[in-house]
Length: 457
Ligand SMILES: [Zn+2]
Ligand SMILES: [Zn+2]
View 1 (cartoon, helix red, strand yellow):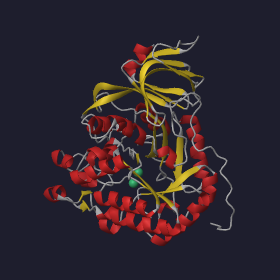
View 2 (cartoon, helix red, strand yellow):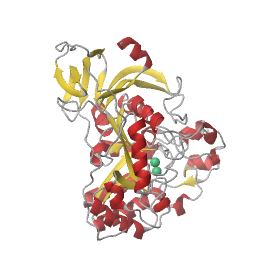
View 3 (spheres, rainbow, N blue to C red):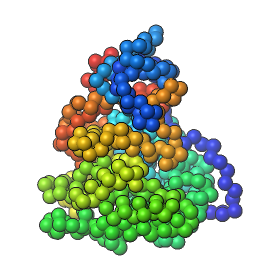
View 4 (tube, rainbow, N blue to C red):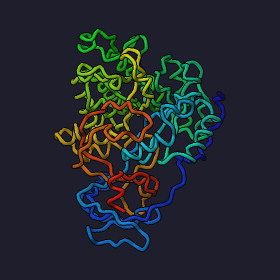
């Protein structure tokens, strides 16, 4: 990589998706909740040619000629969710997921944009791979997709990728997700380039020498089950180290999938010192603990970082509430059924999450009064701004990027299958509240719940 190379602003559009017919749609009398726009009341919302054309009192707007009318009464219209951390498994692992199925799952979960990680086969570590991936997304992706490139070649932690060239070719940021950037000197160098190309460096924090061969959280449950554990300090000590390096280099880092109390404290401390650091947490870490593994030794509950203790979970919820944790990210990690149908110790790590994200957080945290709905809605799209993307808003003139949700609907996860190609959802079998009825992304209707499609026709 040539350090003297001047940085040229990226021409490539940040997100790509396939062409779809722009929506002409009147959503009647839905409860519009957009915390950023300051709306929290029933409204008619008219979408014309894919953009929000008018917002009026319930019953005040007419569906123009050729526009479809949808009954939104008793339902919520929310700004669409943005997920800064998903695995779409393309290229090379299409038996787990592909661009079509992954973005179908996103749309079914109310997501209007997702950002895919580069730990694919081949790794997204050069501009040719990135460009062909973006071409494929232009043909196949139902919702806009952005791509991260890797920090190091082949995720091997040794040689940096051509970050400036990747950035110009459309990389939204850089990560070796699935692995940490273990060598401090490599991270330091990456941060120096990060400053030049202006993209975020997202970090999967884990010290392999502490994680060892662990398969779940190190604690009383792993002790009872006799399984090797991954201690919380595997994550938190790396966050502390990387925050120190980022502070020294004045680089910008984003911490992926926080899981432990000590990690929340490390991020809070770094923020207080003025380090340019942000963080995400997943719906599963916010709502489940390692106790679930005690109930059933289910490989769908095996992920990295692992589900931790109730005390850790509470710290994550508090961190999300007070802003230490900036956004919710699913870390949607699909695996084929036969890959997960093996003993717990041998199963690959990861859970799907796009289709259950909102319902899980709503059911477990909003309904019991732990978190306000408006805060959850805000955190589910806050990932956009962290990556320099436009944040979905329900406001006149904005491109339509929203989801219509029935908060009262109850459903059993997995009962009717999944839109994702994969079935490894950690919430499988649970009864959740809140169902996404329709999703509008980049101005087009990209998802309709089956029963709702019939009633709306
Ligand atoms: Zn990760
Ligand atoms: Zn991940």
